[in-house]
Length: 77
Image 1: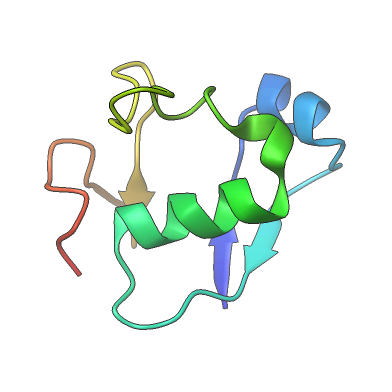
Image 2 (image 1 turned 45 degrees about the vertical axis):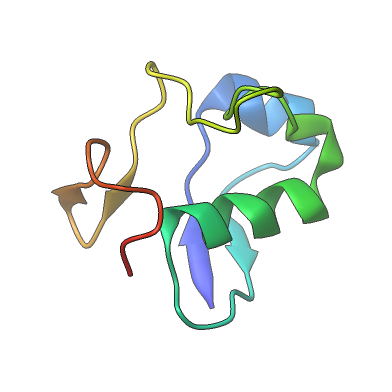
């Protein structure tokens, strides 16, 4: 189980009141977390990642275990 903390504007868009919990299969990567998030909340497609390139938008930060992974490859476990 992965817990995703969305900023307020994305929580409003996804119609959630707090953190989101997702089941993500191994290996857990940024890409697999974002895939699971967009599958569960399709209204978020195109907001976190560019719809054409699939790259995470530069203003979105990605943290795990208190570490900023925003500049890591999206496929690193």
